[in-house]
Image (cartoon, rainbow, N blue to C red; front, side):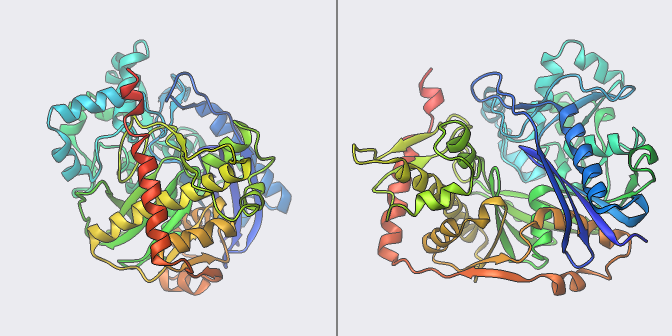
Length: 499
């Protein structure tokens, strides 16, 4: 057996490969950004071929940097941006159009029609999800309806559908395996989280041929083997999980009540609810965390559509930052945001609002406002959105948290984490290895190939880098949150009101 685990971390803005040793030490890490396509207001697309090329490129580069071969890799774990839809030709592997990204809001009207038809309760009960453009079903339906000949070709069995994990598995195995895991299947709005199978009634509702769908396999297990031409030998693909579930697993949140928040492109707060789903009445999602053998762990999730992406916008859209790390320095140039609130509803708002028509806004501007106040307000918006989600989760589950584990690129920002601790009134714990998403995928693979005896061994490998304790008074916290909620109210329904 090889000594290393490879994680392919396919994110919304970049593809990464991280190679770990069995103790979680990062031995190689390579990252490559790829293009973001915005054809219309609220539309977001990716070139799936570019995703594949960038992911393959970083994997080869990581191995070359270490001077290792395929035989040195015990297994590959895949973790991926969820809900993004790829449709490709079964025979050639060519995508028939750009991938429609999870952030894309083009199907908002279609979702409104489903709600008007009274289907939300049925869909929520079966899938644990709300009707929203975020999820895959209406995106796939849109492709079949709008790409010339797609629906007819799909019915003839010529086309395959997958989330990004399935697309990578298909390409890595040379077209031999078309599969996914329950954590990704559960994000499509086509998967019954109770029976752990594709739901025939939902497939009929969205007019999706079942022959397009990938086979659903446990998150930890051998899905297939890489085409030997790719890495000079075959490597087992042995772990697959959507990025947020992988991060929860990588944070060793194995017990019911354990929770983590990831500050990535979006923000995602997940709590392990054990072996049964808790269906939400307050805008949360109930979804599959992972499946190992026959045991399934469920999670409750609150999703924030724009989290770290607001920093990318400050850098690329406004030119206020040279790099993301500048945000912490600039935010601390001022003692507070001077009443400025930035609501980054660029593609609508997720939990607990679920408003596809919300759009971003900056409230409280005066002549005294500087770029430093705006940068600080952008960082604070990440904490406020997380607070909205956590408060909802605690009300819904009745489970009080003693601490929140954090990860993701922006968790390196000490200002953000201290403000988050203050606005939650809760300790935050940052692990020594912040690459928890990739580590989660890698360890799912490691369990499958026998590199670890079980989750107890993984717990022993987890270590703390730093914790953050709250210092803000309850009065100040309540005042700041009240201002935030006033600002949010002014963004709701903006695109719809615009006509």
